[in-house]
Image (cartoon, rainbow, N blue to C red):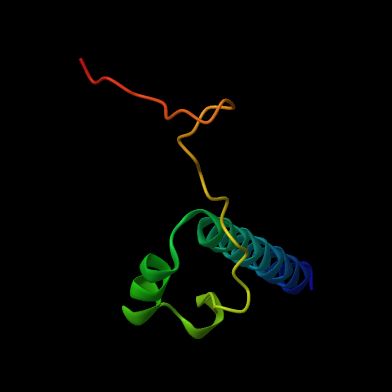
Length: 81
């Protein structure tokens, strides 16, 4: 009887842990989808992620468009020297 209870507790713990890992993985993919261009996300999806891990175009949040202009309208110049 104790063995059965221990197995059941272990099974429930493993199930809860697997669900937490799935939520974390989906959150990570959603975060990536907000940072990368749409064509890269489409390329990853085309390579065959599991169906519950595909990020659709509807779910994508618009990315922040970064500008290289200063507040006064002139462009920033970077040197790699």
